[in-house]
Length: 433
Ligand SMILES: Cc1ncc(COP(=O)(O)O)c(C=O)c1O
Image 1: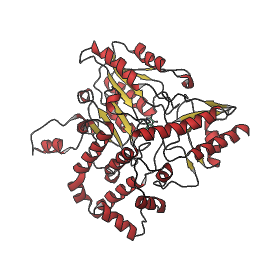
Image 2: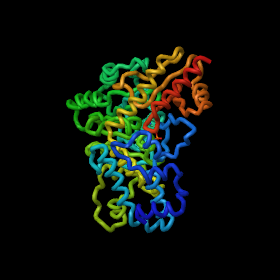
Image 3: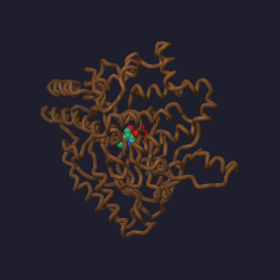
Image 4: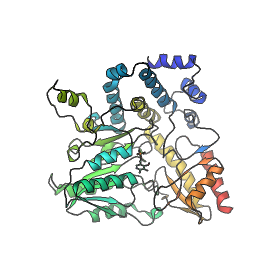
């Protein structure tokens, strides 16, 4: 069934598969550079009686993504094996192409995963390091990075060194962050593993400047002792107006089910063509070139890095294949417009929060050092109490799942200035209670 006839069928059956709001949005509005943010919000079936400011955790699917999932699901329900046989590699390629286009990268260098955690785990657990070699990372990274690096150390005998890039996140300084990495690199350093936007504090680090420092160090090193620079980019994707070549890194990993609005359970990773050789797959690819050679049908041709690192096996294909729609949606909106909007909403939130007596803001005001995550606390209230009180007033936030826990609001494209104002009003009421 083609997309058009599928939508027709949906209309005939009353659109039971999509919510009324999302269906109406699908019929009446085409996302594009002129779509208003108010209309954009209508693409989501999010409950309207709540203010959703935790989209950085997990997305609701916007209408174009929800429709693509339903189209693939319907076909898989009708004939799973034939649909798979006929379409799998076509759709996987389309997803890699859409990601590569958005990132300005080569399709061959994109690997498909289920999440950021899967990407970082594949990358780090597979690293071909030796005892005596060192991974340099920081105290600001996510649990998934830390655990994947611990697995790498357990398997290879390498050591993991963690440094702090700043003491007070609100006062973080670009130059000091870059210097902290520069100073911590030793002749043993083979991998630098960082997170672009920290979900612990909202700090955005200068990834490119760190990349330039590493490139400089690598100039005097050979292939066997060069440093590989790896970035968890999940909270920059779908916010920052960037392309992969801007970052000067070896590997970049992101889940696509947060800011990008991709299907839940999807993610991508990118590696520089010549860098993939430092790691190996954990779940071997089922790419036909590899599988057919194993069976003996074709000569054994090496499969490129991105394809090799794309996990094999059967998956929730309706979600995997609908990911192209999320990249397409963001491209239609325009990266610069998306960035400006999310930064503006967070600026409004931070400016309001810092005027409230008893509120402590942990995220820097500077847009060079922050993106879509705003972290704060109110007086001596535990972060969970603040988030519970916000929720009593229908505002969905989250608590940072780290040792130091803060209340976190992450206004994104589904939110309005009025919603940010309402959140501020509520924090004011909590602070003065
Ligand atoms: C910085 C960071 N990295 C990785 C993750 C894990 O993301 P995923 O759900 O895509 O595995 C999260 C949050 O969940 C995060 O905040």
